[in-house]
Amino acid sequence: MASDCLFCKIVAGDIPAKCLYEDELCLCFADINPQAPTHLLLISKLHLPSLAHATPQHAPLLGHLLAKAGEVARSHTLDRGYRVVLNTGADGGQTVDHLHLHLLGGRPMAWPPG
Ligand code: AMP
Ligand code: ZN
Image 1: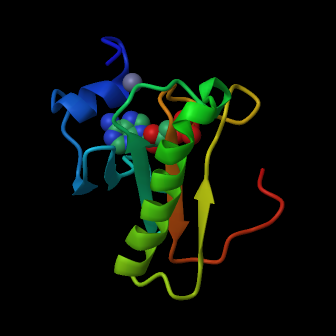
Image 2 (image 1 turned 90 degrees about the horizontal axis):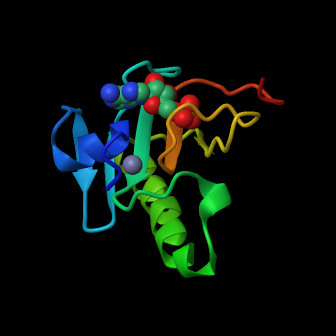
């Protein structure tokens, strides 16, 4: 845990979040500023600042997060499709330096992204 990290504080229960799923590796909760009718975040419990900090040893964790995103999408009946986003670094639009996936659905998504 990083003491100054917002998402580590959510993992620790020090900051409240609308939690929808939790297991030993990850936590899923509603984004506080939703950009789509469904906008959830899947975060690793491990403090990893970004995908750029991941090494091959993190492959099981990354696979778990992606698989869970698919499961959560199914449980939210996003049958028409959805988008999974992993912003990385300043140019990637990352604002919270703790690895997380966005799961967005409930409306058509534009391409290319902004
Ligand atoms: P990113 O810009 O990819 O780093 O995504 C960070 C996301 O965290 C943004 O979509 C924010 O709206 C969201 N966020 C920030 N603070 C909170 C919070 N306390 N609870 C839930 N979501 C948050
Ligand atoms: Zn953290």
